[in-house]
Length: 477
Image 1 (cartoon, rainbow, N blue to C red):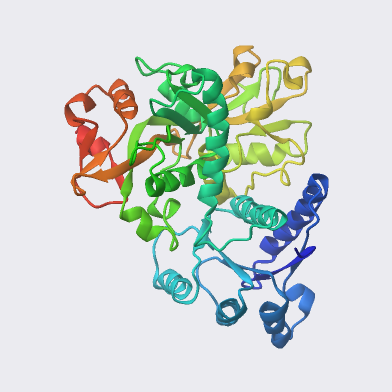
Image 2: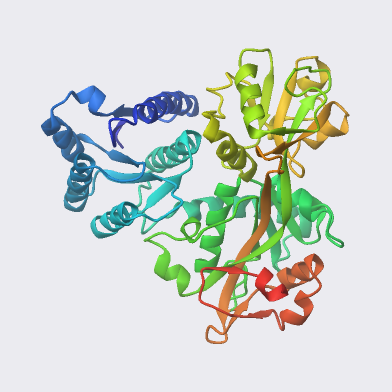
């Protein structure tokens, strides 16, 4: 195993801040790896380190890089394209470097975007990962580099075709679920256990449905809180491998249900490596549960000219308040990186040039999951705010009566809402004419909406189209 990995970052020279962020990220990762005892150091390079000689870049990419990261905003320039083709050629010839492409989310699939997608498809067995802003880019790059280090430490370097990140996530959660289930059922595996995974918004929203209540206490189930972007790959693995349905006499009793405050796209479940396996076996069934309003929670004793006496605040005012707050003794709490709630805040405030991160707010951008009833923020008088929503709030703090709620609106005074979804696997049955789901899932859906009793027969749902993500609300109309 190599004791160091060389990483080259390619992309337009105008992406200076992107490179600086990733350089800082690598430094932090090296510190974390040392704490874990991992004997691997990451070294990041770009044109800044190699001067202005393109021949030096080309040589480094082909012969000295272990990983090449390509950052694409809207199109791939000529120099970046040449570097991509060189890296691809070297990868095919000697198996390295590993190519990672991160492309900015796009609202419209322009000819330039289509050209980049085709270039990736024609020249690698990889796929691109989209990102919404700098924080999201950091989160996703960190996830991939952490995976790379862990695989090398374990001596299990695998290609994307043989070992998907989704399977690793599934194995981790399934193992955790198995431990819980053993103590809960003393080893019984007769029934499929519903494994709820995802964000707090949907968990709290479902509590208002008759017959469901607290998901952490729902019969024959386990509920694990993870960010939205971590939970989606579990469904991919589920469709491909049929974990939750008895198959050929063997039963794996865990049936995952992803809860999310984000609307999923096909790309969240599919890539070039798993596409054919996925679409040949099933689809993702999606149910819209309701809407959740972004809400700011402010310590009652905190005073500020922008927010005092208000029950709502628009995004421009919130951006001004947060920018001003970075100079005050104010702790700012957010949800987990990759969560739907935080993603909505990031998108809503990005037009005003505001970045939500620890770097922007110092070390005060703590996570909700760090809060407990005995949290320091309750015991002392340090002012704080929480960037939450109606359904997503640190309930322990709110129940103490320590904070007040302020709704977030756009500049026209319209409340900003995020939709809440439930995603789960539907396996093709009856020659592809219907979806098969476990009886336990059927029972759960009927509690969410009794209309499903007339729609789902013998745990089978009629298949209306060939979409990867099937909208169950269409069945209820």
